[in-house]
Image (tube, rainbow over all chains, first blue to last red; front, side):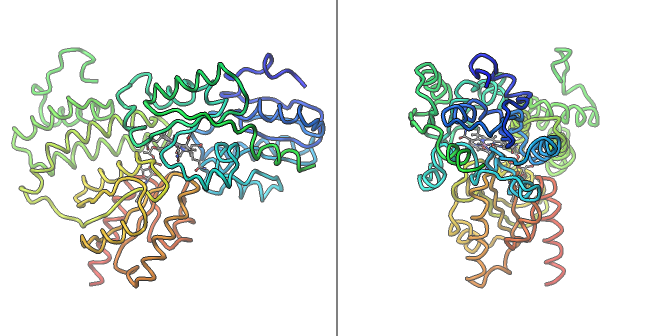
Length: 214
Length: 231
Ligand code: B12
């Protein structure tokens, strides 16, 4: 396994994804935003039967394109792998990603999005935090490229309250214990004008998803 | 684009040039220029309804098309919407005075649990531009809010917006509640939001799913016309 900290850049995960990595016969097709987390779980649990590939995380801003991108990846790798695990939530595809996976015999995470499964989907839904905006480790690192710039806040700072005027809290769902990231996430909350909350979730339901399947 | 050559004076343009320029300015989200142009056209004796439909609404439709086609993104759409809103604020009081056509009344809001409101706001604005009276309930609405408003205000249309997979199903709760009250037939129910699709709209028993604001306006108009023909 390559070392994710030195050999993978967040920029590549955002814009191009990741070519298959590993020698296992089960291919995990993940969102680029989950690459480090999936690799960490693989390493921690010795899941040598898994190989990881990622699609560009930026697909999240055009969720309609996600099901087709996943389908293309499955088809491209069909001859090489025996099983496919799709490390995506619904991500705003309105059930279409689930339908695609069902049709192609791939298994995906049963959750609306990664904020839910990191927190634990049942718990996340039960909390009902309607006025909270969430960050993960990836988003805390990629806040400008993923949130600030696509929303045009670098060009039109006055739009901030049109986007976030109804929000109260920024909840940082932390996968790792990292003082730098924590500091970064706090700055994000300030920039958005939101109260800050730090919630250590670890990898949440993602671990169970990856460890419980062959 | 009006400030491209720095000294473009809107008042020097003839009517058709000005309307053309307004569409450009709306596209570029230039709020002050839109307000100025609206005032100029009013001074030239244009009927408020014509200013609305022949410049602002048309211009905003171009913005909507380019958003759908991936040419424009959310911040650009927001800025255009703000510019249009500025123009509408001037026209709105005048529309009533000048007897602009009244198409019907709609209550609209985002459903319980959802506070994504950009799309909902755009639909409300374009419906208003098309002559519908709008009661905007804002964000995070329980079924009672839609239903009570529709009943008390005599609405024709109930519009629900959801952008989250977790909140879409709530639309069915509202529709089922209407049905239980024996009132489903009294209202046209329109639903929208990026993760929805036509199939979902049908499955929950809405009258229509609308892909964008322009389609919402067309759908609302034709459904209202059909209703009137039935009466
Ligand atoms: C902008 C945006 C935000 C803004 C919202 C600002 C605001 N005031 O609304 C911000 C940044 C605050 C935000 C927050 C979140 N978001 Co968001 N967001 C988006 C984004 C990028 C665009 C939505 C949008 O405004 N589009 C522009 C408008 C013009 O389009 P529209 O909404 O589709 O509306 C048009 C049509 O759908 C239709 N329409 C809409 N409503 C109605 C109603 C009626 C009656 C009719 C007829 C038609 C109609 O007409 C409209 C105009 O043409 C989408 C992704 C996407 N591309 O859709 C994600 C998206 C919806 N968000 C998502 C998520 C996950 C979140 C967060 C949870 C993220 C986080 N990090 O915390 C939070 C929500 C927190 C919470 N507590 O719930 C996911 C949802 C995933 C899912 N499974 O449901 C999406 C799909 C992104 C993704 N792929 O992950 N978000």
